[in-house]
Image (cartoon, rainbow, N blue to C red; front, side):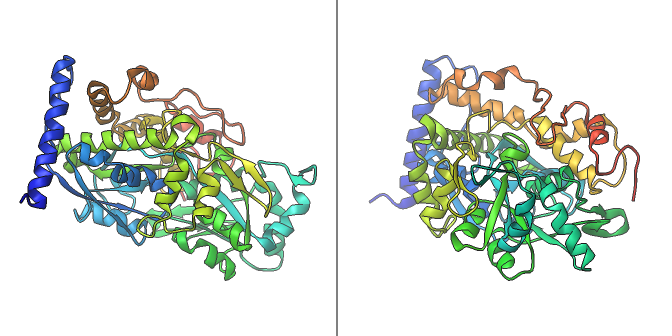
Length: 459
C-alpha cells in the first residue's frame, strides 16, 4: 500500500515530469526546476480578496506545481506580518503597504518582497445610519437616489457640528499602512477634511495630529459591531464587512474605492526576500498557481464567481453568509438599503493586469506615507524608485508568466502589457479629485496635493 507521503511524491514527480516533457517538446526558453521546498504554510485575513489563495488550493493549482500548501487564517495584520518575518509562515495575503513599510523600517524592519499583486479594488467607506442621515441633506440626488460617487464634502458639515459640540468624530481603518487608511484619508482630504498626521520621529504613531477626523485601527471582522456600538461613526474596509453593515441595517456604504481611484491596487502576496533567494523555483511556482487562480476568478465575465463565493463562505476561509459575499463578488454592490447598483469591477483579480506588481503602485503608497508623515522627511525621487524596485518584483512575476506560457496553460496574448511595460503605469488621472499621478515624479505629485506634507516639511 502506498503511504500518503509516497502518493504525494508520486503525484509530484508525475506532474513535474509531464511539465518537463511538454517544455522540452516546445523548445522551452525558460526551464523551471523542481520546487526546493514542497510543504508551505500561508497566512490570510478573512476577506474576500484572499480568494486567489483559496482557489489555487481548492482547484489544485498549487499541487500542479508540486506544492503542498496549508492556508491559515490570522488574527490581524500585525500578527500575520510578524509570523512571515519570523518564519512561522512562508508567505501571506498582505496589505500592499506592508512589504514596503517593513523594508523602509516603518514598524518592524525586514526585507519583504511581493512578486504578485492579488487584486484591484474591493474596499468601500461605510458610515453609521445616524451619520448618513446627517450627511444626506448635503448629497446630490437624482430620481430619489443619491448621486455617486459621494464626496466627503457632504461629511464636512457633520464633522464641524461634532467639533462645535466639543465631540471628536471617529472613523476606523484596518492598519496604519493599509490601502484602507490611505483611501479613507484621500477621500476625506479631497472633501476638505484633515485626517491627521503621524510623527514617528517623535514617537507619535497615532496619526491624529491636527486632525478633523480621528482614525484608528479596527480588525476587519469587528468593523460592523464596533460601529454599531458607537465607538466609531464609519470605516473603510474590504468585503464582506461593508455589505454586512447593510444586511444588519446598521450602516450605509457611501463610496467604493473604485470611485476614489479607478482600478486601484489592493492586496499583494508577500514573503521574505531571503525565502526567494533560498527557494527561487518554489517562489515562481507559487506565483504560477496564483496567476491561474486569478484568471479562473475573472474569466468569461466572472462566470466562476458563484462557485468562488460558495468556497469563500466556508468557515475556514471568510466564513460570512453566501448572500453577503455574493453581493460584491458577483458584480453588484448595495449602498443604502435597497439601492443595489451594478459594479462589475468591484472585485478584480486578473483583468487590467491586476496580478502585475507595478513599481508605480509601490511609489504611490510611499507618496501617501510621506504625505501623512509616516515617512518623516523629504526623500529624492530616486529613493522612491529604488525602494519600489527592492520590494516589488516583476522580474519574478515574468518568470512565472514565461513558465505558464511554456506549459501551454496560458497564452502570451493574455500578457501583452506585461512584456511591454518597464514596470511603470502611464500618468494616471483617474482619481476622484482629478489630480494626475506620475510614478516617475513622486515629489511633484506630493506637492500637488492640497492637504498633506510637502517638499521638506517636517512635524
